[in-house]
Image 1 (cartoon, rainbow, N blue to C red):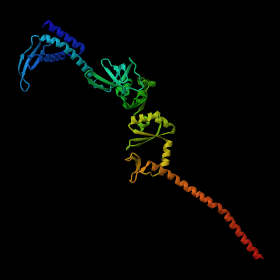
Image 2: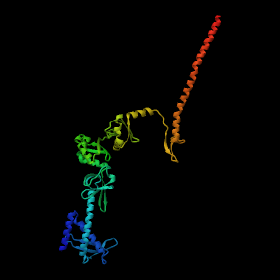
Image 3: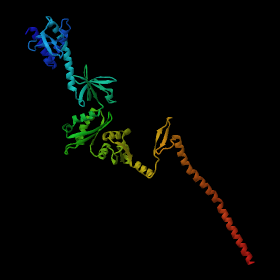
Image 4: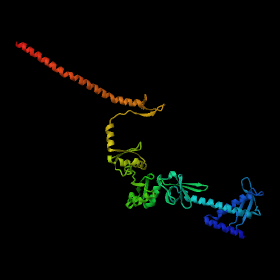
Length: 418
């Protein structure tokens, strides 16, 4: 082995150790590059192969002649006299390029398949489109759509995020993370609650409005473990750690149940539910609560009801006891016309009866309703007026008639006595 070849192999081995790349990978990349360099020569064979002895570092070029089936039928040594100089020029460029490619592949393989994991990064850059997090060897992209609206990410701050996608690009892996994904809640609880990591407690469902409130339904696979207590922790210590990481977002932990009624009652906590009526055909759950619990069950701007619906998968209609009583007393036994409001050709909303017939416009509908309300009043007033008119002269007439009869009888009695 010449001194030059020894120095070449020694340098190659050192690079391989520093970058975590095998020597064979670098030698293969160099051999392929040398084949391309050889074929640029005017007297080069159409087919050739380059061999590099890993022990001595000797480089040889062999020209090849192939048949129609690409089988080698003749091979000869066609190493140029100045090929050592060509190899030296090519080696540096090829090795550096191959090192970059291998490093990109290693970084991608490290994060490929990790969608759904949680990572901790340091905020490097923030603008209106995205925030960059330094994960160590790579950077993660936190798009605006995956951010929590009110959160502000200061440069140098440590941040936990949820991996939603890992893309392979020419510049290396692109890791897309999220702060608003419901999966972030599950991963944070796994970090804080050993019972979840061990499988004793399981998060069955989660519903989240990022930055405001989250509900999770938990289930215990161990009858000796309270799932809610395990997640909340002593004096709320565990759930507080999750809330702090989410910068004050409220987290409700409720017990999971296979019974939809029990699950809906738990999901609407802290409100107390009196009754749940399920309609399997429409997927609607009518929830009855006390009057003073109605606003609590609905929540601020309907937030509690929305989260409960997402958590349970049911469409939830909340009514107070008074509202239910009014509906049942007011509408019981009434027959309603069947039909629907549709838009006609001119764009006007009309009522189309289910049994067919002429459609009624909204104006005609309202006029008909007003007329129906006015008719009974008019009849009653006329009847009252007629009654009053008829009753006024009746009493005097009766008196006069009675007086006249008495006078006639008196006259007849006098005449008789006379």
